[in-house]
Amino acid sequence: MTVLAFGAAKGSPGVTTTVLALAARWPAHREPLVVEADPAGGDLVARLTSLDGERGGLRDTPSTVQLAASARSGLSDQTVLEHLQRLPGPGEVRALVAPPSPFAASTAVTALVAAGFGDRLRGLAGLDALVDVGRIDAASPALDLVRWLGSVVLVARPTLSDVLHTRELVNSLRAAGVRASLVLVGDRPYSPAEVIDTIDHAPLVGVLPNDPVGARALCGDAKSPKVLGRTRLVRTATDLAVRLAPGAPAAVPPAQAPAPPPAPPVAVPPPVPAPPPAWYEKAQVSS
Ligand SMILES: Nc1ncnc2c1ncn2[C@@H]1O[C@H](COP(=O)(O)OP(=O)(O)OP(=O)(O)O)[C@@H](O)[C@H]1O
Ligand SMILES: [Mg+2]
Image (cartoon, rainbow, N blue to C red; front, side, top):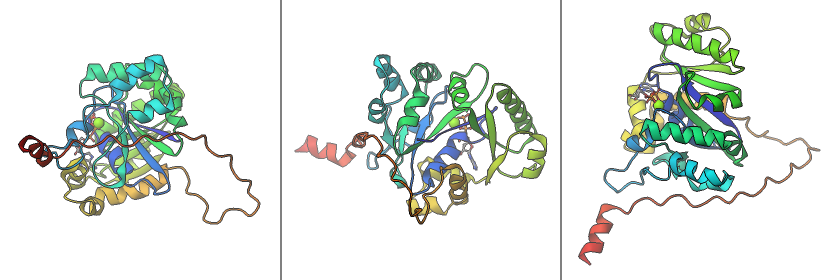
């Protein structure tokens, strides 16, 4: 359905964390899909793996690498769905993870983009893809996906260097026909008003708080979904998600509205099963 790309000019302003926060608070009538298309390598598996075997954590596979290998014989909606995992934590959010290796991750992104990845993501009925494309520069294989989309949400910190790099990126993207919008992380040392005065042509979609506790909670530190939901970062992401998500359905449908054609059925595979807990394996050995 909707495909939104999130990237940054330079540094690590919080693109991955922003995508996770948005996915955790995506409007209930939509289903988010987190896609790691950062050519510098994925972080989600390392951050959200299950160390104790008791919680269903992310695993190395399936990832963009296996999906790219399958794409050699054509990339179908079904193939994409078969390569998704579920993020641990609330919301049962689905994710396509990337390998940590920049070589493997960028090769996979290149192959996927060449195989029409954007089209496939758009074809996934009922899913809104939040695609983390990482740092955007002229050499990024994800740039073709961003060009194809024609828009990107840039995440930046309101520091002098971040603002200047982001401004240059906005101008370069504009020259390439890509509309950029902005999410700021924090409001110091420069205020959002000062930042938008400096960066022309990129509307500000929202400001997320600089909240290390919330950022850590999104990486699996939260003891419970309630704790995660109470963090400033995740609470603020709720408003941002509403602004970015496709419109909510009208509360009262118009009287004479024609029924929309039914969406083509896409079989949704069961989630990748979580590894068995440690006590289960022990019980198997001792029985
Ligand atoms: N809103 C926030 N408040 C406080 N800390 C944050 C926030 N967002 C991200 N961080 C922290 O900043 C660091 C970088 O975050 P993250 O990995 O999301 O950035 P990134 O832009 O995706 O980086 P990379 O380029 O390495 O992929 C992490 O330590 C994360 O916890
Ligand atoms: Mg990242």
